[in-house]
Image 1 (cartoon, rainbow, N blue to C red):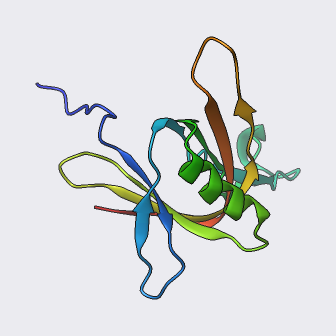
Image 2: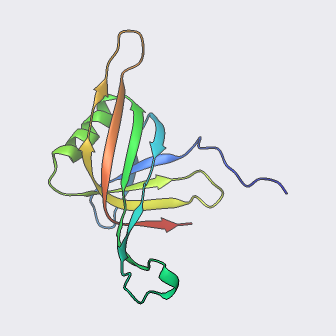
Image 3: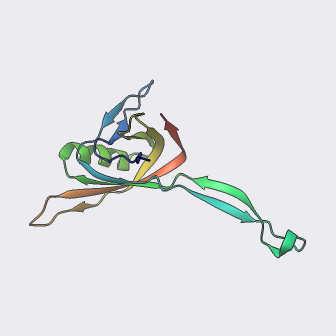
Length: 140
């Protein structure tokens, strides 16, 4: 059977413009996207009469996690991320995967980390960390 794997090339990271209905603009020069790193808490409900002596759990809160962008420095990209970092409000973002269905992950997030890396013999890079607030929605 042939693999259904796809390459990451062509994937876009989009930034919401805050209008209604929301429009999205691509952020250029993204080298890699890591996340969303979603997690889920579990609550231990084990009691003395738990069946077979095994611990029992129920589901707790889910966390949308974080997204990290590694990108080439551009003035426009840095300015957009700096604006979001300085804002007290979350912003909507999308990751649009370049698969045949244009799978899209949409989420609201805060920019929490914005370090630049400047070295004499390489390109200037930017690493952006976004903390997701709420759910991550997937559409195809």
